[in-house]
Image (cartoon, rainbow, N blue to C red; front, side):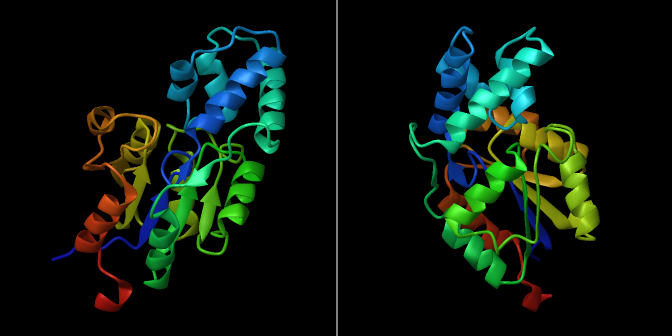
Length: 225
């Protein structure tokens, strides 16, 4: 018998959108603007998935609150500008969301992005009408705290066992585990498959087409219930 997930919750950056290079560049440019040591790409990359303030604190250990604010403002300026490479959707992302929505599944996003950043990404990708709910890091505690996922479950009246989380970082996995939600990973983003599995992901996929194939064999459409 196929498992029945009523609700599928996606992370955004590194899961549906290939934004790693843009995020790293914006963090490095923000540091330079604030006369701080420019982080190595891997250091900046490892914090992707957290809320912006939490990511800055991870990249710059011991940083004071005032400097966090300055860096965050500089980061947002670069992110909303056009001097760095634009982020694009991963292959198969748009088509997968379209098909899941057409089949009647509840879809949501739980992301470390700000509300302004996610709304911009949803508009540019043409996916703003396909998600029943979205929750951002400036509306809840940052991942790996489970609040944003728990808020989604509550607002969409879905028990944890009827939901599936999909993400590319251990922060996504830890959030889902804490919320008692099943979670699978995609390894085309920030953290490796080994890291995702060690954090508690049940499966990990190389790309979205592979994930989509698995979903087709493990979920039932509402019409099949």
